[in-house]
Image (cartoon, rainbow, N blue to C red; front, top):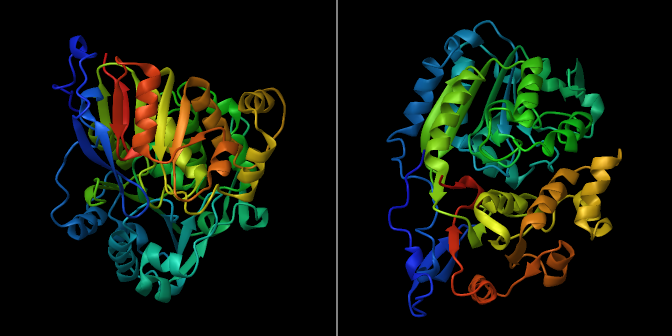
Length: 447
């Protein structure tokens, strides 16, 4: 897997702390980053980060070549020949997918193969998120594509805009956006990165939940799947969330995918195009290798982020930064999260859930033992899992302290003060880990 830390602190020197030994670390925070000063004598090792791999020298050329030499399918130009309609699915604004690099060669290939431009729909897989309109759409795909192609958003609550494809053996009713199901050629794009429930994003996930109706997502995202111990970040084998959304995606059909990985500067490091399963699995192997970051033992304190903009704009999304740190924090420890939260808590439903459930363990018991359901409850369920293991302190300039307290977390005036307070609480042997890019990294305790 990832590299092993060779220079982590010797346990025999844990009590010999130099108060003047510090280092500066930049956490991914909003669009600018947040520089923090940490006591490096307390660090368990270097900041946990993505393994360095060179970005592709010519990503535009690599993407274009992947369309003609795909994995497990004929070239996209052959698949497109004779087709009159095509649906090209892209992720919404919460994912930093390089659409402006992926879409031009893809759209050009379709049109060169004879698919008329008026027959092409670029469909934004919003899942249950809000639509991306106006300037946000231009940010997503670029002005030229936004002006010259039909770009539309998925609306999960509009059941009439979905086709019913049947029910899975596990009882999930499958409703998928009809603009996708009825297209002659179905193409999905996306980013492969660790995901807190499905193991990794990309591949099948842009279809479910990306294009699924609320009636599908509320069952697939229910406790029956999410409470499984393997429904976790970085786990694919035996993960019921992954297995079920793969099953749903196969029911909907997918002719071709284009998935990428990016580095810490969001440069393309790999491209996998072709069969929805074969190409994605190759990308996952690459992603797992560069994202895995070991520590020699669990730590009392983890400082992390939610990967900055666009992922850290809401508390709903920022929970991913917390779940990503869970594997290495001790029971009873503390996670210190920096997230901009410039758009607030999240959806109206999520805000109401927070107001209605000040006792998160009671909330978790409620969803496990009754048929209670509110949209977005799964993220509150994930937060409950975090708070069942550790305390959470949050630095944010986007939400007032009283709002953060309503989320059952402690607001802090600075990351540095939160670190100092936590180190004082846990004593001279306490250890600290830093994850500047939050959920993009897969921390684990080395056996």
